[in-house]
Image (tube, rainbow, N blue to C red; front, top):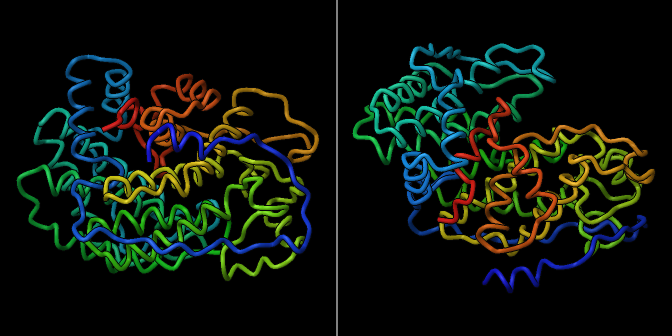
Length: 395
């Protein structure tokens, strides 16, 4: 679909709707199609995108050079980092207790950071450090436990495949790659593949992990299952006026009345285009959901499956709506009781690049916030260095 055509499809002003019980509608199930042959490296960043980044950094071009410098100055890029694996990672609500939760997430981000550093510099020490981190965890971990286990697995499981794809397909040797693949298949994939009826950012992060892991494992069946669940969750996470007077729900969620849906949407009873299921909770968790939506769409695009005609309008509207208030717009009384808990995070680059730079769609508020936040760093959970990897990167 051309940028102009998609822009026309995505046009339409935001509007509000009051709920009525008859409007509780389950999102339509869409059947995806996994590629016959997966593209590698192919999780979040492609070979051509990596080449673009390397060229820009070597030329000293902005904003990539400053983003690269930011990454290399971070503790994640340290060649003296010591991995801290454990057999059982136990994560309670808000990471309390936190037995290995931070260590696992940050070692995964460090592995991804080192993989990017390897590709940009061709300094083999960074590839070897990424391998050391991945090998340390694949030799030890057996499970995730406690209440936050699905989310923790989703976060770490989203990042490990990004690092692994770059190393496996651009570096010369990784003797324990099969053990790492077994870890993803047996420890991570079963924990995330069936999703969650918790807040939407949980399932979206879990599906991001499932999609990335499926690509690394060349597992078309799991890929299809994850993308199907993702497409239904996106429709149920971001509201459009065309949905009717109530947001869509995920099949099997049990949200079968107006009161249940309003409660699930944090008590918000006026629905407007671009509102998310967690907007009235806080922008930080909303950012997690939006980020995972954009990440899955990008990975699918690299794999030859264009999901933007299905998710692009919701992603554009969610980015624009949240960006407007993150930039300081006054909050109307009907929205979240007139008060928002801001803090969207460094999560706009991927969606902005896909919709604005690649498809030519105007995104005034998102552009302003994206440029204001550059270079986008890491949220220390599952987002890292997206100005470096995705700014104006239309490959």
